[in-house]
Image 1 (cartoon, rainbow, N blue to C red):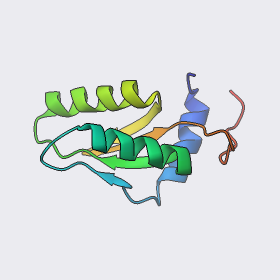
Image 2 (cartoon, rainbow, N blue to C red; image 1 turned 60 degrees about the vertical axis):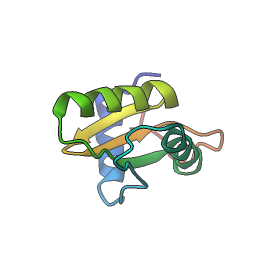
Image 3 (cartoon, rainbow, N blue to C red; image 1 turned 90 degrees about the vertical axis):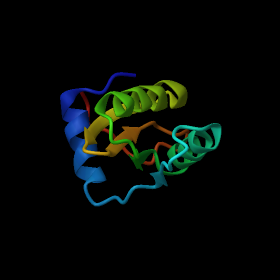
Image 4 (cartoon, one colour; image 1 turned 120 degrees about the horizontal axis):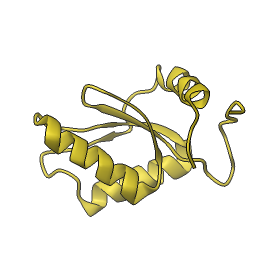
Length: 98
């Protein structure tokens, strides 16, 4: 599933007031963190994840791994905060047409 620019803008607007649901610790991206992200995506569809990494390259690798492992769509990355979206079976968020 690829999000259009219009859909990403819509999701960014929805994510603006959200607080990070998952905060990554010093241990980095573990199975437990991925399970928590997966659980949060199933429940909320649109979440923020706080990536604790000072190194830009490492942060990008972690973001790519999260996207790949959760099969979610990256909406945006601002600083250390990643916004991701994955529709659930309930379809709580109605996206605008492409």
